[in-house]
Length: 228
Image (cartoon, rainbow, N blue to C red; front, side, top):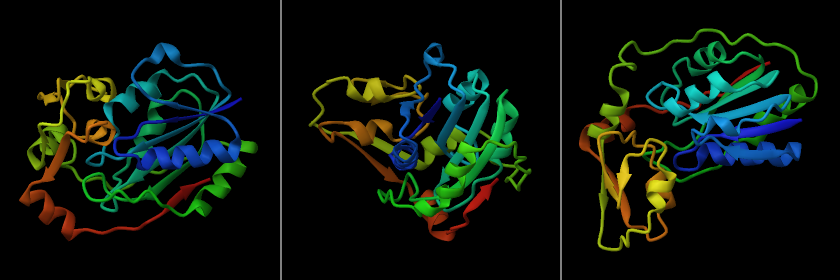
């Protein structure tokens, strides 16, 4: 049995996960922090975004608890740097990693473009059908990336609520870190933008501060890496 799991802030990782589940005709499930829902499928495909060259906290917890025999790790990144998240992810799982990939997509803070080269995934889908252990090497990571990444995101991106908010609570439901109450954001926020993306009233907006704009304009990376 195969199952695709995903964590997605603004939709990029979901687009990849959805495509894989369609190609394999298998179930897809969102990583929501409720580890008791984990099933014992033979193969798990885990798709997640890179945040400040790190694995999102919720994904780390999930990887430590998953019990599948075979694991496929796919990281989407915003064309800046993926660090070494796949190497770190393989250290967290107890099953055999049989494939991995870094897929460049639109940045969470820049683009709503969810397109990607689907051919990247063709060899991975074939590997799932004939599993074989793979080793993901240790790649370069900025030594500063582990220094308060969530805080840096909060400083760099401002999220505001307008008068269209009707306190429906949808944003609270989608927030993975319980950082919202009636559309108001506290210091737990990791700026994944799930609240902004899923607000039915479009009452939440975000704005990149000048320092982040300058940083995002300075880098553009389209490197695709597949491990088989």
